[in-house]
Image (cartoon, rainbow, N blue to C red; front, side, top):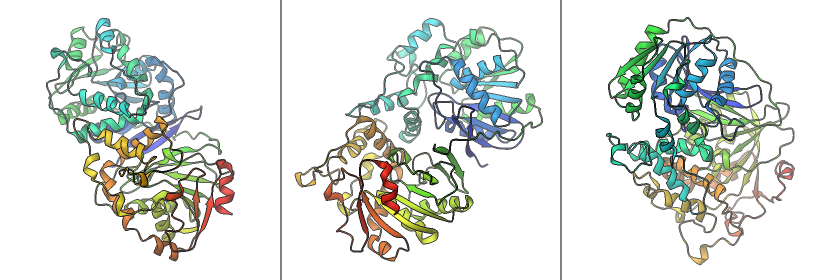
Length: 545
């Protein structure tokens, strides 16, 4: 079973990201907040045996653009979600919703009963108004970036204690959950989804909690299943909903405590209750502004690559490659006038597919070569940030690359090594301060982990908390491959690659770049060095002329 990723455009230009798999009648799936469609992969794997699944990222979560409502109600999500469904070419369909996704699904079913043939609710229940108010007290702490990185510990505390108590922030014995605490690796996965949701993580989450009561389902007239799963942390709330009494169009599905039992009973219900033939039309194409970068996904054989593109085609493209260990989120905004631009998250980075350990540079370059071949791009220029130059050189060995501009390359040597075990996820969150120190101290010292006076960087550091947060997020996302990245960078034969390169190579440095980090004199081969001004609109002419 292969799950593919893509985007569908809305009429206002916003994009909704989704995962899809399987064949058959359409099953639209909505996830819990503040997570994203990745959390539905086990359900997609099961349900795609019978249906074609379309698991959407709720607007504002995952990679979907947010709605323009500061404090939304659950109904504010109905319009963009139904528009996304329509633009996917889906008319009538089955709708599955988990937690927040279920509350949005209920609202969709009430407003569009002629289009929703079956509603499936998973992890939904009933709370009294008093219980809702008590739950919301302290449930949604602020997570705006702080200079000391303390907000990251708040994120971790939320994710860890989801499996300790409900509400997660409760200190009462009666609120404890009788389940095993997941591994640090499992909590890290959820932590990354919370980081993706960011400072506005509570928007749909809070709106859904306010509607988690029996009154919200009263006007649902479509056939509906409610899952009573013994492994649910909201089992008591589900029982409370059932005890309130359900209309004849509702059916309770009972499942044992395992994930397989959870999804198998729902798959059986799908086969019994959802007997429609596939009804799909062509996906709606929305014309986009060619000056605006838009998100796309290349679905390769083994990995998917998330990239930005401005849809221009008339001139030779510019490919922008971020530093190893970084992502497209930390690349500065550069004006490229009328040239086509492609900015990709390298495999294992950002929002591209994760990679496992024991990597070589080929694991990063091969999917890009396949992507560019599929896009019929046979000649381009490259801007590479830092050690992303390694990927640029490898691409230039295979494809037609006329110019390579290397931006802010730092010297790579064995002194940069440290014990990578310090940043691997720990159940108590003790790895988080170390990762924040990496992000912060790399602005102050070189290498970041040696704090002697001769290692001080005599330049203006960027200690803006939001900037440091993005750097830290990149480390969290690549935490399992940091050791491999370090080996690739330290073992790379820079001089040999530059000497033998068929491309014109330029070394470019930003205006505030520390002199001691410039590698102009440490590389033996000849190349052009450029000092870049603060005005990014001037960069293209300097880099490629």
